[in-house]
Image 1: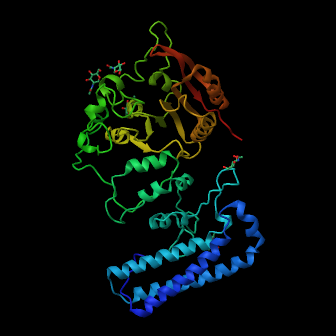
Image 2: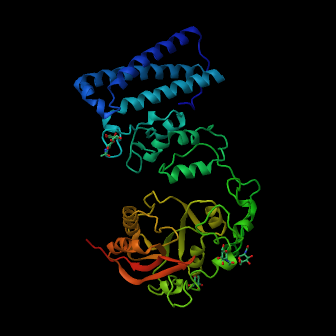
Image 3: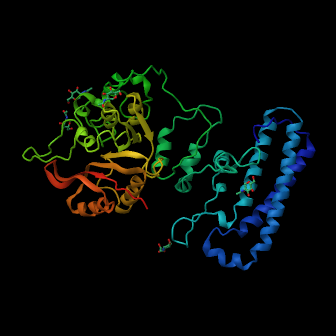
Length: 454
Ligand SMILES: *[C@@H]1O[C@H](CO)[C@@H](O)[C@H](O)[C@H]1NC(C)=O
Ligand SMILES: *[C@@H]1O[C@H](CO)[C@@H](O)[C@H](O)[C@H]1NC(C)=O
Ligand SMILES: *[C@@H]1O[C@H](CO)[C@@H](O)[C@H](O)[C@H]1NC(C)=O
Ligand SMILES: *[C@@H]1O[C@H](CO)[C@@H](O)[C@H](O)[C@H]1NC(C)=O
Ligand SMILES: *[C@@H]1O[C@H](CO)[C@@H](O)[C@H](O)[C@H]1NC(C)=O
């Protein structure tokens, strides 16, 4: 509606009209909300006051209000005059209509109550947010011609993660921008929202900032094993300000999970080619070589997912074997996504909170390293493993690479992996002997999904 050409208003009658609408709104608003079960502990008296009669009355009044405002909007549009005031007035009215509409459809049955503690429900409705752009985003967008679209839906239902409601302030800050303008330099805020469960995050109608002087990336295959041009990354939110800093073997770079991952020549190059033996006096290693794993199913492994913390080296090595791997990652303290992309590989920017964006029984391989470790909750591990199982095809491989945890937790985790009842091609537990400490172990396995023709 705000896109409509709006124009100047015709003086006093408008003013009176607005006052009228507003007072009507106030009445309806209070009536309406006094009936809403904001708190379940209040509902006894709410339900005692015959809600159905009032529901109809409210809906009727709201419909009248909407009609009146829409009529006003049409008037403004038809008078064909543009001015900042009329534009502001028009978008104000459009927003009011949207608000009322969402209130009208936001009866108790469409409210989501999260958590099992019924005495403290979380009230979830788009009205919860004050920023107009959030409400606009989550409002159902009916198809233009009032018919079903090719996907069989009458509208588009854009959604946000339920945890967005507990991060109201941050989400409002994130969605506070000017439509059509350059977005704030706030990817870090966005990532924080996502990591804390505001995932999916709303899309925005602003242009993401880009590096100031983007230069042509290296061509393939040179790109895979060269540190990219520093100019192709926005460094403002990182402790390091260039790739050399990230590759340099010093601490304090702002990330720790793979502090050597940007050193392509020394650290990354031998991975999955030359195994590392953590204990020099033993011939056991949690490292498997890519060639050995691919030989388990010659020619069958073509596409897969790497769910790891890293710079895409696994995907790079697999690409040399003509296997296409997408690397799931977020930018934890370093520009991992940009690095992977600049190497000519596919980064997918997603958190562990989300169901994988692949259909059932599609991927040949899932590889994971340095991600799922002893920090992870057993139940969460279950949800993740079932989802990975879902996207793996029958005969596909799950490669758990150097999962590490405390010795005493191992049994609990192995139970999780065993739950899949996959065929075990490889299965090793190796002591993790670093920092004069032998309380931890590595677990690595290559497992094959069985057929399930039921
Ligand atoms: C529900 O919340 C109340 C108030 O915070 C608390 O006293 C009660 O123990 C909670 N009940 C459960 C089952 O968590
Ligand atoms: C979608 O539109 C069709 C008509 O095109 C209608 O029959 C159907 O009830 C609508 N469904 C919903 C959920 O509104
Ligand atoms: C990678 O590590 C090696 C050994 O520590 C070091 O000599 C080399 O300079 C590092 N590479 C970069 C780009 O910093
Ligand atoms: C990098 O530094 C760590 C200690 O911070 C050390 O253990 C490791 O050997 C170093 N790597 C190289 C390649 O020099
Ligand atoms: C990858 O594919 C190319 C082109 O089909 C082929 O020449 C090459 O031998 C393949 N490499 C491997 C490792 O299979």
